Length: 477
Image (cartoon, rainbow, N blue to C red; front, side, top):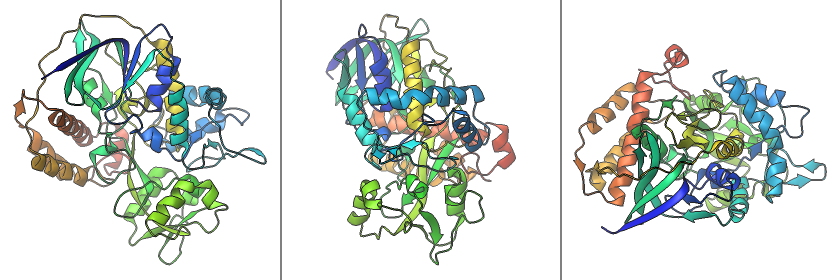
């Protein structure tokens, strides 16, 4: 097998907003390599519809901080939340300096409202295509000392003298070795492990596996958020929460408001809405009759509904896997417990989301903590030593059956027996030294699923032990 070798100061695994933010804020004296498992646009950041939350227009960040903590079920870390919302007050101005044209109307910024927010503070670009527009603009701003490589799968981190010294993987089908003075995990979440998700199919928890293999601490892995409104058709499409912020209401087949008993109605926290819709008997729709200028404000939604022959005034929806609140444990600057290794974005457990993420805080988290990672970056070159790489020896058919099993328990209401069965079935998988890119990718997915399965069975914190039923956390028995 042919071998490609690269040497850089900083390797960033991922090309979403968290990765790009770090790259944009690193000094030009450093050589930086961003790698994407598929195309550089195959990220959850590019799919983001709702926008970015910020208290920029408010007298202070106090209300945003309170809303974040309440939505988290008071499980978020208050000091980290304060960092997020206070430093996030300047994010809109900073992004504008990079050329982001936030939507405006006759009164100024066209800010919207989403679930569990006490007021309008969601900034959009291009209506419901915020992520695509933001990422296209920011990627164009990447300076010359930053290189982006597509179709690169990283399967192993290397260590020398207890410090991460680089990574190995595949560039296409060519074996790749990258020596780096620091490595940043910005690999996203876990949604691609199942079919019914708002996430990119390629986002399969790779960063969790890479971090665990070199001894980094993982935390709160069982904290998983399900979005209430994915389009209820054969393939999943996210229906942005901003639609409810603009006046849409969740109704049943008879037109009754499904969330009428909740004080926030259809704008209740995501976990509570997702649970209600999961338990509801019969179909649920978004009644958009009160949404003004829906075609202008939600062009992506309109196009999707037209493509599927759906009346945009009455949109069928159901919950789906959306966001991972847990991940690689980091400090306030994205440093993991392993020297030279950083984590940022959805792969990291920054402590700002708790049991349930407040809508549109994810892009803000990428920006705020991405800047912090760049500020704290320490580059130290170490000799590059590679250990032998192995992968699970699984056929396409067997991997497909395992993936189906994952889809049966990585749901809003899994049964502990199905989780245990998956762990038992994958416990003694044979390994092979003849690793192909496909085997490596399948191995990472199965290892990530096993990490999540173990975490769910352990029921990591007292909140889960008290509930022992899954909304965004816990399992049923």
